[in-house]
Length: 81
Length: 301
Picture (cartoon, each protein chain N blue to C red):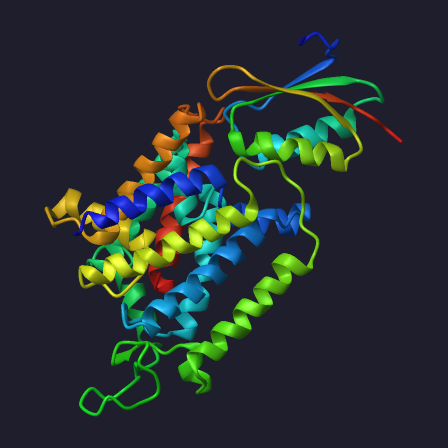
């Protein structure tokens, strides 16, 4: 299920808020329309925040996948107006 | 009964971990991200606790004993504390519950924060600065006369720190109603940022506020006229560690928060030893911890 044709991985494991949020936003701003980003996060609060910031920027969350312990993969489809 | 501190702390730790409460993030979210979710949660919890604490005092179950009013120290201390908490990566309770979640930088922040607070109160580093600021303190207020039972208000200890009601000379309930009404208007009358979370904003705020209020009751039972106190708690843990002093109610409550947050994080499969990629972060949080301890002690909280 996790094969979205990811073009870029943003690894923010070990970082706590607001770093994962900010890095994700920065990556979206630097990406092209239609690109798929994979964000690796291990901080629970950031997992709740990132989807809201992604939506605010007009992009789409494809999946938030939890891998066992405190580790998540967030798949983002970049949309540019 | 002093162990009620540990139990209250334990419940509070679980709630903080589940609700992701953090004053540091709350202010930052509003100012930098225009997201008011956590600030609304914090303010609503304040309103709930404010009302419940005054009710407990009205029923005679507790007596309020605010620390001495000191405009200069309160404002300067709070400002310095704010600088420290940004560097340390969380406010006092934020650092405490994240220490339980396995955030290693929070351990160092908490150690230096508590150590500095302990030192300042016990003749150690910066204690002269603390004494100097105390010189600006406003004299305590006589809330009622013990022999006649008459006076301004019986919600407080006979003679204790000044409050908004005593400064403005109004009934404490008027201040409670005005503050609560402003908070409720802000929380329910303005648009809330959306966020998917484990427990909703309102549930979390009511539970946090209620546990905070019961803390006053249980701590009163061991002769301590105060609610939860993180700085005092960490300072007490240091006095136990360094000088063999006994645990106090708030020291045990801080331990409870760490353990409660750890249990909650493990159960939610969110516990992890988190280490920053850049080791300089450790230096930053230790510095932040010292500044927080300094600001908190000067500010009187």
